[in-house]
Image (cartoon, rainbow, N blue to C red; front, side):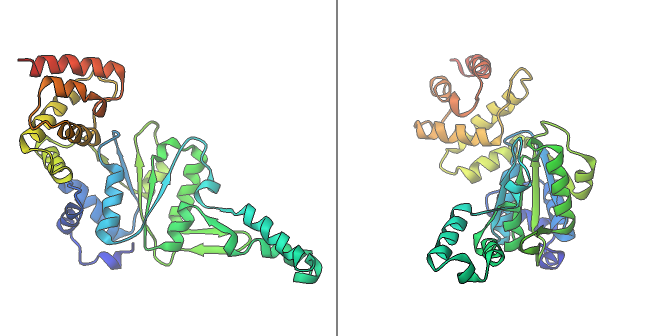
Length: 300
């Protein structure tokens, strides 16, 4: 989205509109989001898994009333998976239809015309990056970009510099309005400086106690207030345990609070907490450490 569509917004407005979607952010994140919208710059979010990076892009799309187009990165992804492909089965059917209509040469004026007709826009399969350019204004989420390789980063850098792509058979596709771009990284590897320079940057950390309580109350209002606070206090204590393989994120806090609620808990007790740990931790070693911590904290 270009600057002109957000001229009336201020950082506080961004925080309030995100809050209306259920996404509660601190002033620093609201400010960098505001700047990304106002300046038309991609926003690169790094942080531990479960801290709300992907959820921010979803909230921005909802708050602005824009479609969200998501590109999930993975090892080995290339430009084809991000840009476009051709619908081969439909192209084959098209050729058969031409043959059935009386032969290629007679039907469309020769082999060259038949080949050209195969690369019509109706056979184009738009992948996320091309779809975002075509649908813009839109929000393009490039999720877990750190999983991709250097070549894919270079491709992204080129697209984010021009907001256009060239399809040899059809020509150049330009976004009438540059999309709002949010890139996320769990920092499994360092991204190149060239890509970072193109973006505004923010590290999303785990929220402080009161903010996390507010997040759970907003996203899971069915959970009792007492249980919410007990869950968050315990999760915050567990995050301070440097021995955990994967400290629980906000997403796990929400899952655990909801799981306890479904088990009928209104306050945290040892038996129910231990039985529902599969919603909170995802490694056997972490489960053992957390059970030991529960014994110390909740044992009568």
